[in-house]
Amino acid sequence: MGTRDTRVIAVVDDDESLRRSVGNFLRSAGFRVETFASAEDFLRSARRESTGCLVLDVRMTGMSGLDLLRHLAAGNARVPAVVLTAHGDEDIRQRCLGAGAVAFLDKPFHAEALLDAVQTALA
Image (cartoon, rainbow, N blue to C red; front, side, top):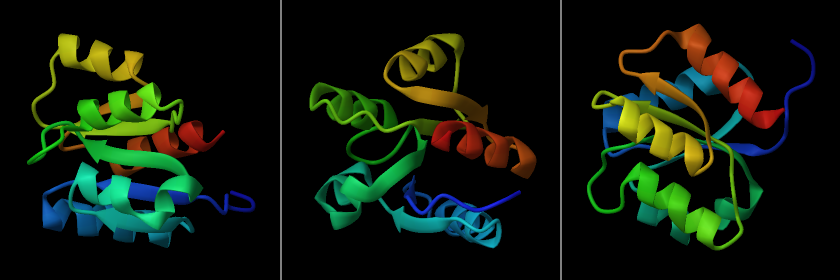
């Protein structure tokens, strides 16, 4: 697959097991990954500036994934995002894509679909 991007992929999900498994999968594919239990944790982190792609859940405790995308866009800090959700419908899908998501994957998702989406986000 060639040389990997050196930017960080930030996995933001309040589900610890999903956060850990997605992070481990992306690391095994050669990416630099940081994980965050909430959108607020991501926004407070020093990694925010070096993030090349977000992988995030729509529904989280506190700030939602859509709210995070809107917050970043309002500050002119659009970061391409891959949105993961078990509660998606066409309306939320369109709102996420309009707020900067490059992909919207329903849980459970295929590992290859996630990898393709992350590579698209980093391109």
